[in-house]
Image (tube, rainbow, N blue to C red; front, top):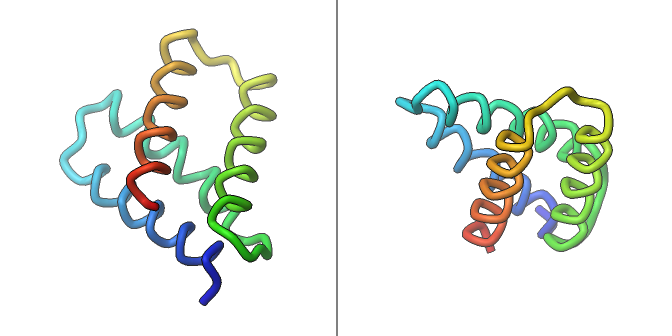
Amino acid sequence: MTAYEQQAESIYNRLIEMENGAEPNQLFLCSYLLGHISLVSAEQGETATEFDQRVETSLEDAFKIDQLSAEDLHDIRSLWVEISETAK
């Protein structure tokens, strides 16, 4: 298993754990990130950094078209930073 795949699996599992028993807003954030994690996980890569960069690109691209509030954007970014740093 590559570092890319390990990072994807680690982050995915952590979000699934967070989803269990999450409050509605936290559940939304986890679900939103899980969608992006799943998409990026389907791609091929070698390093954890490459995975993280692809997720960040995926999020930024989606933020340009999704109708999210400023608070949701902030919360999604914050959760992504927290979860990506703890997965390393």
